[in-house]
Image (cartoon, rainbow, N blue to C red; front, side, top):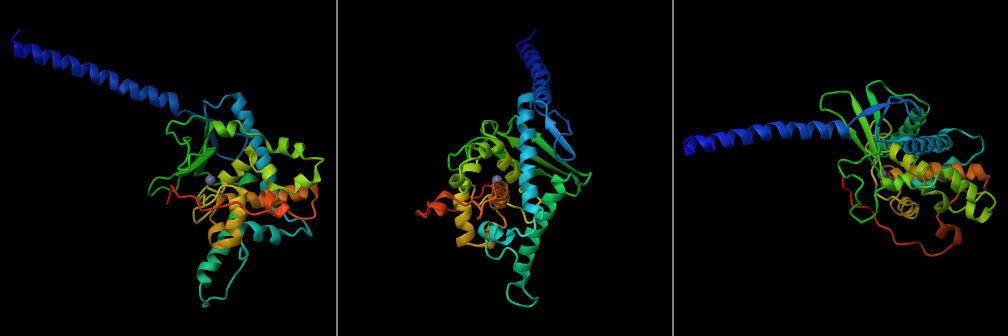
Length: 302
Ligand SMILES: [Zn+2]
């Protein structure tokens, strides 16, 4: 064999090896990472990633059941309960404001009010099991795209939700990855039991904020079209900041902030659960101390 023929032969065998090995890697990666199965224990039209084992499934099912209590509290009408007070606290003074057509800013303000009212209606329907057949919810327990990495502030990511919608198609898939930090959290039931006999602490919303139910409830408000439109973001993601944002910047920002809706539902639930004479609020509000510093989160998604 001439040196040139030898070189060609070596090149051909190398190319053959590469052609065989590369597709295998891709196929294995896809098979290993992206298998979903039907899940009939929570929202309608749901699929769950096969890597969610029984322990994780139990955590998710409890979170769904408890977050349903928050949705019910927020959207059910209990006679005599002051919903306006709680909505004003978390969604801003103007959460329900409407203006006559032709007045300055009437279109923007009326659209905003309609958007809040639609979000409440849709979250109620979703938890009641009403969903269009072309819409799906997918829960991930694995994180192939590293969405659970710490955020731009270096804080742990608890969960992340995104929409998969092909251009020109009416089908939409709402994905949520449940990160390790989520799976480690307490349940709402555990936190309610902890303060069952402690009246002063029942007024502090911080005691009930970090659990799987509140996180799941928060994530559902990120579902574009299915729950919210325009898209609901994360301008703040803790009760201290959400409270101050509603007070300082008002409904303009609060109505597009998932945690504001989550705190709104939680405050109603806790007040009704413990039959408090006023809704729970951040500790510094209850104790009358100086509010902590706050600022809007940098948006990763426009
Ligand atoms: Zn969020």
